[in-house]
View 1 (cartoon, rainbow, N blue to C red):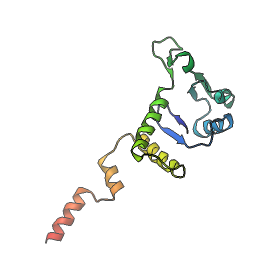
View 2: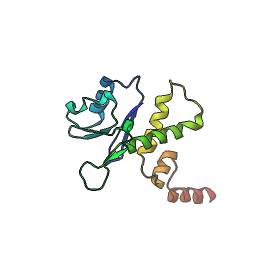
View 3: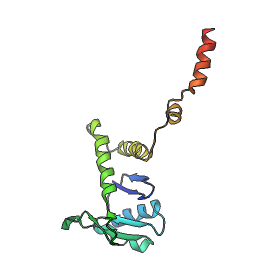
View 4: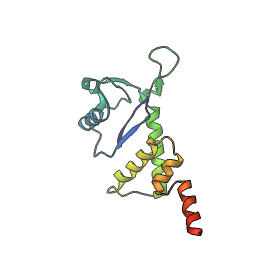
Length: 148
């Protein structure tokens, strides 16, 4: 699995990948981020050259017990990968009730989780569209005309 999440937008792009080598991760970085974006990662060696792709890059060193860092001295630890770690936890919890997912269907389950994760607000209109049900006023007029 590999993913990117917009720090400002919160929008996630999750991908099932065969491996997490430099070539794969750099391809995903190019496909899902814009030049000039700042990437926060751990120190996995495959991220070592992403700054050459026109993106900023900062790391946290989990091996040394570092989980977040305040680089600009404003008291906010802005260098972290907690958003991504939380998303992986969410995906794991989403998949847990299925008690095992075939690798043939994993991408579909991940896509459903990504969609739900990116959906920030479930509105009545959204639910009507999802369930293809008429608006309440349309339903009331149908019930009245059917009863007559």
